[in-house]
Length: 295
Image (cartoon, rainbow, N blue to C red; front, top):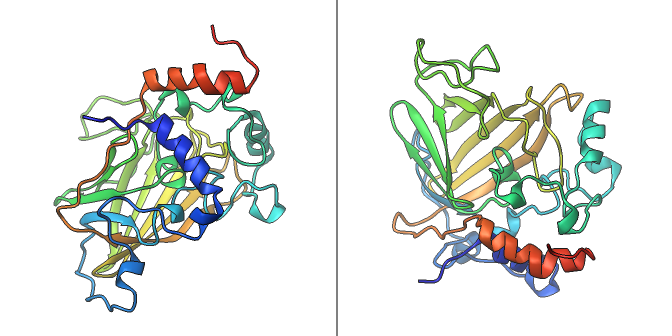
């Protein structure tokens, strides 16, 4: 059986992103349904308090793969696209060496933690290479399963609050042992009305980046997610960043990304980060391209 790995697929994505033909077309997941397939068709009303289902970016993967940074602020050197850095945040950003954006370096020289298969964490999973996801609901949780690297998150909906101690974000019960900060944070959520679900996350491990362009965050990061069920077939997702150490004010990183509901029989593809495939890529491509000898 053929296996699919992150490194070669990302290489293909990079090539396709800059192809004039690709920019004019929708990059499709096999078997997925997109808005252009149902152009002019009116959707049924949205179900109440229901995010469940398999979701795909409504306009295709090229609407959600954000290689050059968070969608609302691409790393292109334009002042209007800069997040509101604090002095510490700007220093941290310039110290990062991404392989995309206007501060990019050859991949062999990057200090991006993800190519070594460290967890990319949240919110980078939705600000970098967001693909198909599946949302499951229980009485106490919203579970989000992501295609990229086969990861998942838990958003608690049982009425608990975010932990007051940022060093102890993992309380499952009042007498649970303390937990270290998490790659994926600690999340709680609630319905604001019958069609709007809002989640707050904190307690993040500070060893990740926010996006592919090297935007930094600290252990003070708090992320707000807003999901709006527009109709039966569409869900809008907005991500807001609040990190008072790195940024002078909260900023919207992803605004109303439209997702389309897929068939319950849709088979989500596999995309795994493989250290052995990464080593091969570095040996045969990344190191030679940077003028480095592979040892």
